[in-house]
Each structure stands twice: as C-alpha cells, then as structure tokens.
Image (cartoon, rainbow, N blue to C red; front, side, top):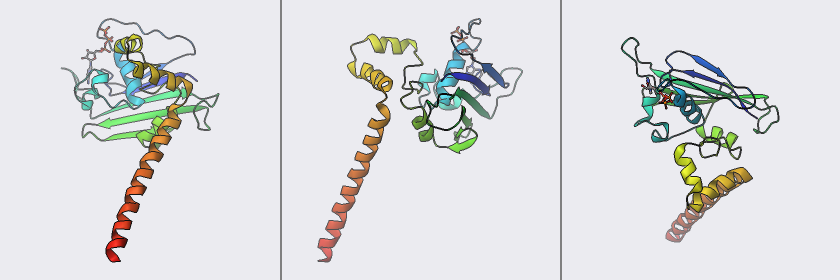
Length: 199
Ligand code: ATP
C-alpha cells in the first residue's frame, strides 16, 4: 500500500487544480521557502480527517480554503483527493485503488467521499485504522511528534505501538460497545422506574 496521487484544488496556496504523482519508494519535495511544501503534507493530513486547525497551522478550519491574492479571487471550496494503492488489500475494501476525498465550503460544511461515494468521516477513520496512515498514526511525523516519541509521555508512545500492532480498531469497537451497554443499562433503569411507578 502506498500513496499514488494527491489531487488538490482550492486548498491553501493551491488555487488551481494540482496533481502530484507519487511513486513507490521515497519522494522528496523541494522548493523555495513559502512555496507550499508543507501545504502538501497539510493536504494529506486534512483529507485523512484532521479536525484540528492548529495541526494544519491555522486558526480556523475555513482558513484551509484558498483565500485569494491581489490578482486572484478567493475560492469558495477546498477539495483534496488522496489516491491510495490497495493492490494488497491492506485497506478492507475490494478495490485496487482507493480514492479518499474531502471537501469544505466557506459555510463550514464538509463532505467526505470514498471512491466518489459520499460517506462519513467515521467511515474514513475506520478504513485507515491500524494502517498507520491516519492523523493519529505514525506516518506523518511533524517536529512536535518527534519530541512526543522521545519524551517521557508513555501514553503517546503507547498510541504509536498500538496503531502499529493493529489493535486500535478493536479498542475503538470495544469503547463503542461499552458506550452502547451504558446507554442500554440506563434505559433499562428508566423502564424499571416507570414500571414501579405504574405498579
Ligand atoms: P518553508 O520552506 O518556509 O517551510 P513551505 O514551502 O513549506 O515553506 P508552506 O508553509 O507550505 O511553504 O506555504 C506557505 C504559503 O502558503 C504562504 O505563502 C501562505 O500565504 C500560503 N497559504 C497558506 N494558506 C493559504 C490560503 N488559505 N490561501 C492562500 N494561500 C495560503
């Protein structure tokens, strides 16, 4: 599994549609200061579901939409698509290529798509869970993240090992099941109360 292609339109400094092809192996992005190199990794984080504007080096999430220059009007929407090679079926869908898309409008409204079909952010999270490529994974290592790994924060390190070990999906499902059980038991208590009132 590897990232094959990144399509960016209206995201940060990418006013016009841009397609970046990646090959297997190492890709280095070089360019002058301020030319948009980090915006490319921000686009990858964003399309994979990043919810923190701070992690994307901004104040508000809407700031990811191209906000215009002296000669160009601002855009109303940002769209990023990340095409992932899935020949080995590491992602649990029966497609050789998986395209994950995120759109955001100035109104704050967001859309997520998998292979062109509308989906929820949760579906994207579940798709990439335990592969290491999620925003909480270990594939995007920013400066703060390195400090995190080598610091004494055992909890931060543990998260990385859990993702690598492939247990995050199970832990998440367990947490969801526990939550459902709690809701069910409080519903049962309410029913008991109503029954005893009726008695
Ligand atoms: P450096 O080498 O200095 O780290 P870089 O190549 O990584 O730079 P980025 O930080 O990716 O550059 O890009 C910064 C540029 O992106 C700035 O010129 C900034 O004005 C522009 N930019 C960021 N957000 C937007 C936006 N919403 N609309 C238009 N331009 C934006």
